[in-house]
Length: 171
Image 1 (cartoon, one colour):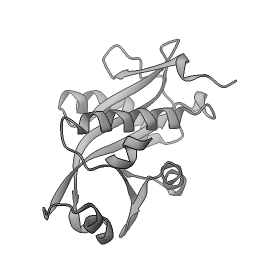
Image 2 (image 1 turned 135 degrees about the vertical axis):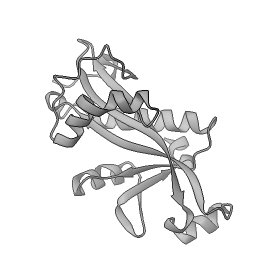
Image 3 (image 1 turned 30 degrees about the horizontal axis):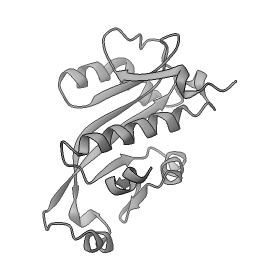
Image 4 (image 1 turned 90 degrees about the horizontal axis):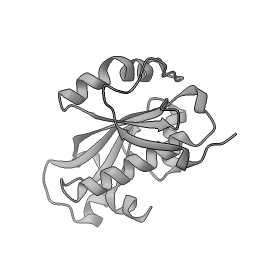
């Protein structure tokens, strides 16, 4: 049975959320939510957002933080096309982690989380400049997932991908 988006809501991680039952296919992502996410939020290192099912179970989560893109890492034709300033680094938003609970597999949770993260990053880019959202895909499956949504790989790092804010605005 597929759930609809209305069966879920997303909010910042807090101490009220039960993280102990969260289980996903990637042990490091599971461990991060259970052991590090709260600390990193308190230290302003990464903001974690949880997708809650109507029974308050964490169905998934993602993290956002600021980052920089070395201008030399971008495709030269893109730099020229966008007429970017000649700064050595350009501001971006890092989608550091994204995971869904194994119990919600096949229900579009990954897509729901990604779209919310992109929308949030775009909205905030109007207050704190950000050229793009950057992800570091953990494996080839994750690379395909992000490419399916329009992310482009950095020329010298095929597992590191980005999506320009102008592209996100059109979603």
